Length: 216
Image (cartoon, rainbow, N blue to C red; front, top):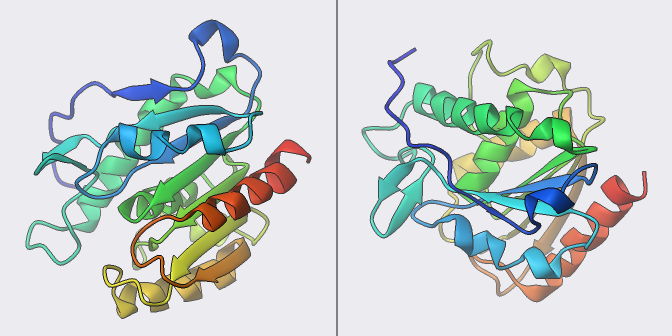
């Protein structure tokens, strides 16, 4: 493992004041490359009201925003970088999760890679996972990724546009194999969305979260 970088203190946007959060299910939003915590937080009002929503900022500045780890095609990319980012997010989550009845993760693009990595680190900790236009990291045989403990019982919603120009076919192929083996998958394809988010998709995400988390 490489030496951990000096990551900053977590920056989080919350949908509820601290006094109003106790006992409610938590939905953690994980943004994509070059974005920030305000990006997905704009969706909070469109998601089921039963959740407390927390949008976490990635720790590494890049361009006008932030990233969880270097792009996979970059010379700076490594699986260790992915692991350090997941550990950063999980350490923050450990400071708040006891206040909530459950934790669900929602990630867009690289944020989906983060959400699924966090699930693979802590297979029993999450009520559900939502992945928007993203991918699952190929972790090889790394023991930190406890895939053998994921028996297909965790609900996961994965949606994408087949014409997405950003997520490469090798990532889609790996992700397809992984989700089929390790989660209770709901998969939806959209057209005309490209590498983005549309209103129909968010409606489906809301239905999934209501059915799989709020009413179970």
